[in-house]
Length: 411
Image 1: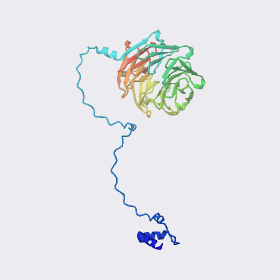
Image 2: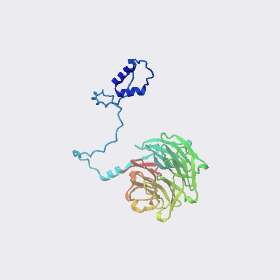
Image 3: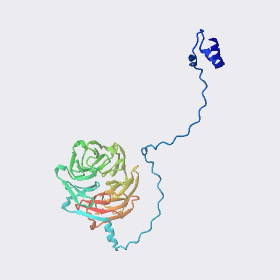
Image 4: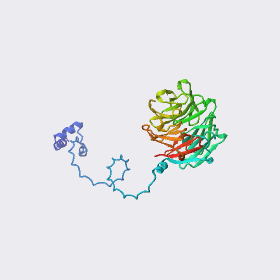
């Protein structure tokens, strides 16, 4: 047995012997089967070097197309193309008499007669497609199509609550009418003229209400009889506040206008103008004194940067800076044709003034107050003109004495 093991040691070599000796201890002389020895494992040898990377496999099949990503921003605009060839000259037109051309350029139409229901018309407003006229002596309101002046309807009767209707304004969906002798305000649906409500009673503070304006969310009413101004919610007619007292400087307030952030009120008897914050009714300033040229001011309009006030007794017009109330100029003198000026409106570039005493209308450049022209004469049908409004392409003038309305085409 010892000889066999020695032989095995010799065959395996010294290293293997050491391995076997470290794991096994021979404790007997009993013969060990060769099959047992062959099952003994030697220690793990060191790892061999990594083989070379095999060749790349063939490309797989193309996958599905992904979802289209969002469009990128637009690229810069390309250069302007070359100017095209000038077209052929058209045939010569027919000659015109210059006087006739001037009249056609300004005179639109004169609407009069019982069919319209006009009766000492005063206020006039545009709602985007229709013209609304208050008939102060007829206790009624007439609606016209702005496109052609055709009669739509005349609203009258006790159910509307009209009482010497004067000022009128549009708030985007409704028509608001100040009833001078009724101490009330009537609201109508502009879409069909139907009655919405008539507001009256001491809680509103109405007293001979005259002028009315819309500021985007509220209706402002000038009460000439109580030296006050009432503010209403346009959404439901709810009373917001009535402003009165000496601190406001109100004195027979008639005209009222909104400039985007402030309310401007003209005080006829006080020959002054009061400015209020539209947001909360807080007094900003009262402008008065000879330097402003106010003389029984009546109508008022805003042109985007300036306030224009017509002076009924002064036969003049005063322009103010809307930003700070600073005086810009007072226009007066025979060259302007002012004669008891009453109403005033802005058309985007010009100021239009209705001259009640002169049966005329004066047009001014809003940029510098320069005279454009004064329109008068029987062809225009002016007869005691008072109210004036702009509809985007035409000027509408109410003729109080003539119970008619004149439409003018602007430049």
